[in-house]
Image (cartoon, rainbow, N blue to C red):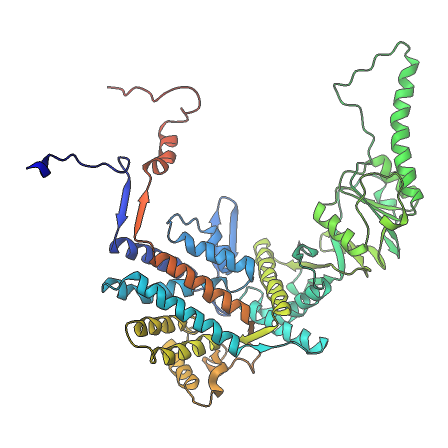
Length: 555
């Protein structure tokens, strides 16, 4: 009787939604698998593109990370996949679709075990073991490109860039862009700063009209009268970089000057003119032939420089100015007093060139040479945007390949080889974990399978051929992957379908971590306040914040 009298213990706020146990875990897994299905079709050279329309406009992309960012995913477990795609993008640059597919597939393979009552921790333990084995195997299979001559290295890096670009919108011109990307990355040397490679977009023309500037190029800035009288070409000019306005500044509105004699007013006006002329004289005395400023250069200064055969540009964006500083060896000045030769930059050639509808200021043959600018041409704006994203991936890949100079065979070859290795290893393990490692091995086959599906080939047929090839005892089939052109299989390594080993290592690491994280969650608690905050704001019609409480209910 006493047990019936005990009051109910209320632990959480009323309205709190708690879902727990096996149904909760399976619901999370289904959400992650649904996200993986969204990007599934974008994988590989024959992958489809997604058109995403939101309030910011229309985006056409087949880059996994871009799609994941633009999908406004609100499911808490599925957000994990968005995070791993972003981390893969920032860490390696490519393989963003692969990492989401891996994570979705690991969970798909784990689902039957969870439904049969296997404890998630057993799965997590086996998955971690399998992940470590897979990464060790990748390192073992990777081929180093170290110690090659510069020419050989360039062609090897171009092969890696071409593999990345083959799955993008600009895949048709991958050789053209691959060499451009490699030249750009080599131009910035070992510098870590990717912002030293500028990408400028000019609508019009064809993709083939794109070109690389070994130096800096930026659009002509807003200019005043007198600009057209300035010379537009210099050989070995000195360049002065400023962060000050060269304009006639009127006094601030609230400044008050009391004069006893009206003639004194003229002296104040003269002082203002003297200040600006003093600045301009000092710019000319420095010996600079090109003056660039982050702030405005007014009409007086423009005409003054034109009369003295000096080129000037005001309102240059900060990143362009920093690139010019890095390339020409100049230093950004915040004053024109005491401008010495050491702070002036120089380059072999400066010219203003017409590109499509735009005019570009181009600095080439820079002494430090640690910058490059790619000028992209193309038809539609969305197309050029996607081309820029594709080049960003390729630049990241080439940079990674230069650093961690090991590559593996692409086209699903490395995935099939690891899958075979794990299956073989699983046979040596007693107990349930044999099944789990086998499931992990099967999940790795998602890449070659999806490559076939996206290209319209019979995936079962191709995978059977690949399994047979990889199972050869001699090990000669280790680098065989899907041949997208014929629908059969071919030696990916011999066909130069390569990718840096770091891409695969990172993808498998991140996907395993994400899958283990989802498997380890068995309860979700939703706070009612955070749930209703948005609803309240709409329901109250903006009443909050104006001092009104909730309106009384009408009868």
